Length: 451
Image 1 (cartoon, rainbow, N blue to C red):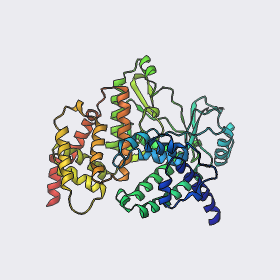
Image 2 (image 1 turned 60 degrees about the vertical axis):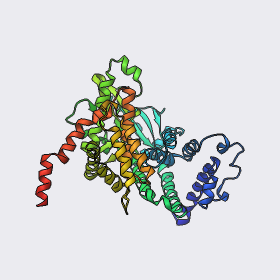
Image 3 (image 1 turned 45 degrees about the horizontal axis):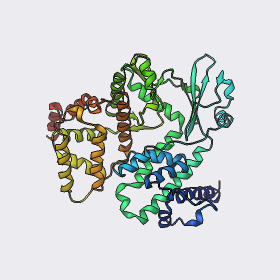
Image 4 (image 1 turned 30 degrees about the horizontal axis):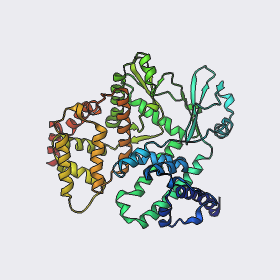
């Protein structure tokens, strides 16, 4: 492909995106970014469009992202974790983002897979359900049966989706440069780093074999723990454009009526799920980044199956230890320690900010001494990040998936058990980690290292 041939599709895509944004009332922002009306498709703006329909700016943003397609839906879903950057009304709308994509005929899906595998799917599977079980922006899911009789799930990438997403990433890269030139104050939020993290995440999600490698890595972490399962992978037929996993015969995580009818203990399931996710985050440091009810099945004896490992997070040991130190600073009423960690995370330089430390001290005083059951982890996270937002501090991009996982877990736990207490669920693991970081042995090691 020549450079000119590569640019033309990007320009057409840019016209599509500008048209959607203008229709939802973002014309002024486009003008400031140098994207004038010459990019609009003829007849694309209609009287009574969304900018004059009484929608809030947050609602218009969410609708625009949905129309702009999979890249922007995924970007919005990631940005919904950035409670350190956006006000609650924007976060609430971004959390409502859903893939709204038509299904693809199975024959179109099969063509790319068969080219990759070098044989017809009919020679591999005894039966394939051509009606999809689910359709997402990146992949479509179909049921199938192996010649052995085992039921499996085929997750197949939508044809042409990589080309669309790569074009969108190029345009986003350019858009960040334009935005920094027009609004230099946004540099403190590290937009290039946010985009880099997003690009890595969505490219990994497009590699369906990578999802299975993630699944097996998580599964290995539960080898010696009861009650948590991950569907086995059939590697013989798994590749970048399709993965094959065992089909789960369980109760979908969102069907609480069926779970109760089956005699399951929802409180026990909530506790087990929380323990599993916290184990992934704090001990394995490799975790399912979206543990909501749609990615879980329930089995007899209150067992859980986690599915869909397209979006995972990884914590370095240093970052995990910083989280433990942050907790220790709150427990030990050390606002100076908490302030230092938050400023380090935000890459803040220059003089200290005494007003931030005062506000953090007030926050610690407010939560300190409350019974465990009175604390709400989601509210704590929102409070801390609201403080950061008020002082123009941003979380490092590698922590955004952690926030997403915590908030998803807290929401799922409260659906299962209205009295669910994630702080209490986290306490045993956190106490162990705090002890490892600050107990007598750790202090003795630190003393030896100083001499």
